[in-house]
Length: 161
Image 1 (cartoon, rainbow, N blue to C red):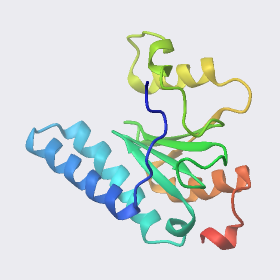
Image 2 (image 1 turned 30 degrees about the vertical axis):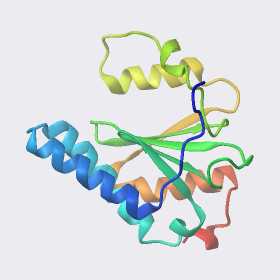
Image 3 (image 1 turned 60 degrees about the vertical axis):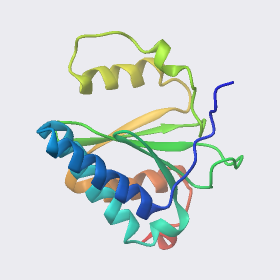
């Protein structure tokens, strides 16, 4: 049986994991990976040092940050998945199923396009119904997260600012 219930982690643990990944990428001279981990680390630190950390729960899937409004195992639906792109932009994807499909990797289109274009095509292709995405420059990541939280109606602006 495949375990589909991700375990949320404290924000400090997510930050430490990103620091470790970034150090490992730097030691391997993988500048692209190091850069992506660094921008995710900056976003996670901004969330961790804000009131948002009290009301948002998260876990990492390598480069992606997945955010839910209730700890894992709760029936409260939906998740926000934030992925860094090279452009430099974040892609904020809303998925109505908080746990996701454990077999989704098997249905993604095979392509030779740059990863950013492939990601957008995948979301567009499977983004039917309540699933959607938005993009933001790295510098606007925290502000975009607030916009996404407002759009979803998860919290009042006062609760997360």
